[in-house]
Length: 497
Image (cartoon, rainbow, N blue to C red; front, side, top):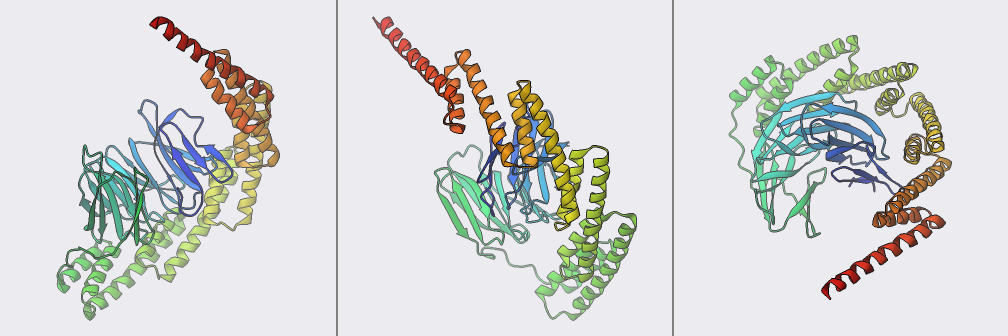
C-alpha cells in the first residue's frame, strides 16, 4: 500500500496486480515468470519487481508505472530475494541469496554494489536512497550509506523477514522470527550506531512492519487482523556515550582528510565537538578542513563538467549535500548539473527516435522529465512519441482482431490505452476483453469443463450485464453441473444398495 495515495499492488507467485481507484492492471502479465518481491513508492506511481524464469535459473529486475507500463528491465547477476524502492521512486535496492546488495537509480545505473556473506531477506530505503537497511537469514541487520559503505551492523534473534527505516537513517526496526516458531515474532528497534534501544517479543504472529518517515511511530500488522502502533522514544535503553578524547579525534580527522575522506573527517570532529562544545582548537580544525574540502569539491566538479559527466557530478553533489546541506556553492553546482543532464537525455531521446528506437527514446525523455519536470519541450516530445506508439499499437490491434486473435488484440489495445488513454479506445478495449473472455468460456464449455466455463461467463456478465449469449451458455453450464452432481449422488446410492 502506498503512503500518499490510494494506489496499491498485490503479488502472487506468478502475477503482480496494480490497483487504482478507476482501474486494475497486471504488471508483466505477458511473461511467464516467478516473482520474488515487489515494492511501491510512497506516491503510488512507481514500482520495482524482481523475478526469475520458471526454473529459477536467471533473474531480472523491472521498473514500471502503476498503470502497468514497463519502463525498463535489467538482467541481474545475483539470485534475487528482496527488492525495495525509495519513497520518492528514484532509487531501487536489491538483495540476493548470495548476500549481494545493489543500489540503482531510475535509469538502471548502479550507484553502489555491496557484498556480505548472508542471504538477504529484507530491504528498506530512505526517502531518496541515501540510506539502505538490510536484514538476513541469520539475523544480521545492517545500514549502508549513499556511497555503499556499511555504517553499522547488529545481530537480532532469528531470521529477519522485514526491516523499516526512517528517512534520516537514524532509526531502523526489524521483525524477526526464530526457526520453527510459528506463533510469535520479535520487534527490534535500533538507533545510533546500531545499538538496540528496544526489543519486544510479540505473542502473536506478526506479518508486517511500518515506520513513519520521521521515525517517531512504528506499526505492526498481525495474522489475526490486529494492528498496533508504538511511539518511539529515542535514547531509551541506549548505552552511555564513549569518553571524549580531543587528541584522538584530531589524529583520526587529519588521517581521514589525508586519505580524501573529508566527510568522515568532519563527522569525527562534529562528534567530538558535540561531546565538548568548548574545544576551540577542534572547532578551528573543522573550519579549516571544511574549507579544504570545498576547494577539492570545486576542482572535482570542474573536471566532471569539462568531461560532460553530469550524472557522476550529480551523484557527487548529492553525497556532498548529505554531509553539508547548507553549502550554497554545491547546491548551485548541483542545479547546473541537473539541467545539463536533462539536456543530455533530451538530445539522446531525439537521436534514438530518429533511429526508430522508440521505447529507449521514451525512457530517455522520462529521465529528462525527472530532472526538469517543467520543461514543456520535453513533455511535448513525449506526448508526440506516445501518440505515435499508441497509433502503432492501435493498428496492430485492428490487424489481430480482424484475424481472430482476441487476446493479442486486447493486449495491443491495453498497451495503447496505457500510452495515450482515450474514452473511445477504452470502450473498444472493453468490447475486445469481453469477446476474449466469452470465447475462452465457450472453449471450456465445448470441452465440458463446466466449472471453468461458468467462471468465464460470469466475468463476461460482470463487464456486460446484457450479454445474451453469455447468459444463455451460463444457464446451460450450470444445468450440466447440477445434473452431474445429481448423477453422482444417485450413483453412490445405487452402490450402497
